[in-house]
Length: 125
Image (cartoon, rainbow, N blue to C red; front, side, top):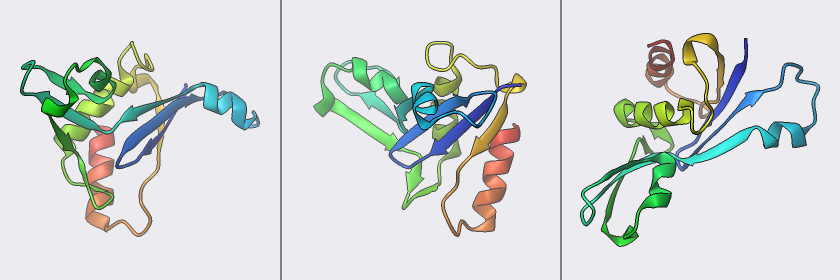
């Protein structure tokens, strides 16, 4: 079973598939990783909705209304976070099937227990 390693940062989500043996070098690990903006955006000019790396296709960056799931380093909008994670698991990005994958997720230091419980619920849904 492959292992998905996710650093769910406020500015960017860094994710990758861990090699079968963790004794590999850091170079091998970095080759399997992707970095996605941890946000969604709606364009006023184009009338489009962008998720994570879809921002690269936006024509007019000044007309974007950007929404972030984090506030002060903690996730506060789980619906937005779900959109970013779905994009991360999509065939174009990592191409994984969440039901067939183990997950290792980082979390901020000294997170309140409520946020830890929300992360657990988010992962298992």
